[in-house]
Amino acid sequence: MLESKANLLRRHIIKMTFAAQSGHPGGSLSYADIVTALFFKVMRHRPGEPNWEDRDKFVLSKGHAAPVYYAALAESGYFPVEDLLSLRKLGSHLQGHPCRMKTPGVEISTGSLGQGLSVANGMALAAKLDRRLSRIFCLMGDGELQEGQNWEAAMLASHYKLDNLTAFVDRNKMQIDGPTEQVMSLEPLGDKWRAFGWNVLEINGHDMRQVLDACEAAAHVTGKPTMIIAHTIKGKGVSFMEGAIAFHGKAPNADEYRIALKELGESA
Amino acid sequence: MKWVYTSQRKEYANALVEIGMARTDVVVLDADLSSSTRTVEFAKKFPERFFNVGIAEQNLMGTAAGLAVSGKTVFASTFAVFATGRCWDQIRQSIAYPNINVKIVATHAGITVGGDGASHQALEDIGLMSTLPNMCVLVPADGIEAYKAVKAVAEHKGPCYVRLGRADVPMVTKVDSPFTIGKATVLREGADVTLVGCGQMVAVCMDAAEELEKRGVSAEVVNMSTVKPLDEATLLRSVKKTGCVVTAEEHSTKSGLGCAVACSLSENYPAPLRRVGTPDCFGESGESNELMSRYGLTAEHIIDSAEEVIRRKKK
View (tube, rainbow over the protein chains, first blue to last red):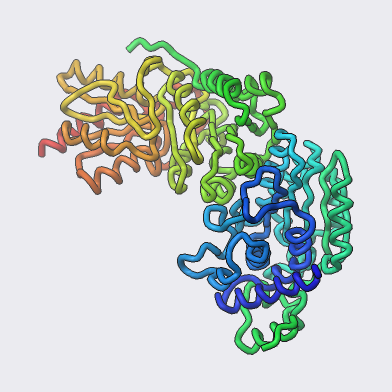
């Protein structure tokens, strides 16, 4: 059920980036399972009432994965699914990177990397101040952890014991210029977060059971935030995009589009 | 003129504590400078609504953004040089672009920071903040205006930057003087030249106007306490009357009040203009008054500039 929803989001990602002839399919596909788990199972939210004060909140720190975010918002009912094909087009509410002012359901504008966790911290502090049960979820990329601001935010989250904050790292081990460990190594990544005072879980980010279990486990941790390092495959679900750095920020051509949709189970 | 001096920082703290008492949605963030910015006064009164983020300005602004989108009115404070330069992209991306309720109140702006030297002297902050869409930029003239500006931004919807100094400054306004975001006030009427100042340079403009009067020149002094949005109506009304203008700010002439006034006038009513401010350079260590002299932030410089634009007007 959730797996087929994730597949649906993947098909949207391919259709959106094909229609736009730009955008970031690779890092959207790698996050599809986690985003599906959050929007369709874990998070308490009301698409008909986007400003419901007790909602759980979602921050896409790696804003270039906007296609998977928009697909999840549309399938949740925040706006019509037909809008998805307007991605990146002039006048569309679906900007290349998430925009709070334009898109229903988007909590904060992102795109300049490394800023989402700080914003999630602020949301988590506000929820504590207001004694709300809201959980805050922040989805980060692995490459963007090279931005120093993340580590400022990592310190704050544990200092203020933000146990209502759960962050994910999409550990697909790739960034634009190549493998993360070649460009600027991140390992030992789990130890880094543990050293900053976080509860750290490592999962297969494409195994729905593991994703749900990790979210559940994080909910029961008290006194510290949780980082879920999700081992993923960039481009997951489309054979020729899997592990292909070229599809970080490149749309499929017509042939690739047909093959991709076929692989994702859509009949022509 | 014999001035009474007031502290902008003290008035910031007074206003903040009053706002904190009246409104539970107000939270305050600081980056390890709360005893200098005086947000410590709020922290003492409302410890649960004060968050020190440590020496981490980028995270300061991001955290402020997260609180603001959760319905809080957030005051974020540190020194002006760090509040604007160290985290400009965070302000752009997470605060100005989403147009949210973060009020950046920065202290220790300008050359009068003194001994700390160039690394701590914000001479570019008005420009850095003015260039951001949605951002309001306020430069209060004295302690009374600092108090009013803080009260005003708390009520304003959207991001604001309030620029305050370290040193005590001359009291040029009165407790009952009007203060509205986006509205300049004429502190002294005149016919021959318009002196437009912001921050503590308003007092220097008043000194210059007094001296000019002795020389038979009637100077109008405009307190441009909001640099953005610029009160073009008041500016143009004055310059159409006087025909020439001198701007004065404790900030680089490359991007601050002088530039905003020059842009407005060149499009709407070209008139002889001189900008008094720091030239295209960094500051240095020294006593506040020594630095003001060295960098030309004096009544004498304003007077010379006024006499020059008046001469140009007559050609």
